[in-house]
Amino acid sequence: MNTFVEVPATKKSLSKRRPVCGVGINDAHYMTRFNGSTCPFYKKWHGMIRRCYDPKLHAKYHTYVNCTLSDEWLTFSSFKTWMKKQKWEGMDLDKDLLKPGNKLYSPESCVFVPQELNKLLTDGACKRGEWPIGVTFNKRAHMFKAYCRSNGRLKHLGYFNTPEEASEVYKAFKSNHVKEIAEGYKSNTRLYRALISHADLIIGQKL
Image (cartoon, rainbow, N blue to C red):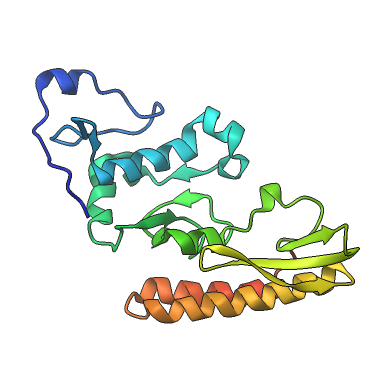
């Protein structure tokens, strides 16, 4: 629940403002950080800018390299206006569910998704190793194991002779799981359609 109180900005606090990562303009008429509390709209906006333009973050999370913001979202008030119209509490901002492979954060390409669902949709490409996503080699069994995140935990899907077999089982399970979750968001047409489309894409992906 949003309990942040907007306290009017002082001349001193305004004079200390600098562009976030050299590009983001905080034009809020109030102090976005006050008494140890941060405006939830500013927090999302600030985090988004860092993912796009912070070299230190890129060194740790390579998937954000080359990500950018639309010109309108470089201004905080513009992003806040958009965000207030969304269902956002307890949600993560996603840039590529609506447009797979997308690198641009914009009103047209972004949607808020539940945090646990966001973890499920993340492919983990940067840390999966030599095997397809959702597949690992079990040395003790000398077979390939398929697994997928489900309800916050990794679910074991079985052992297989080849990584290809394990991958197909993983894709089928994940696709069906995403569709099941989508049923709970039919009231959010934009998110529901994106999830169904994503579930269909999983089957044909080369992982």
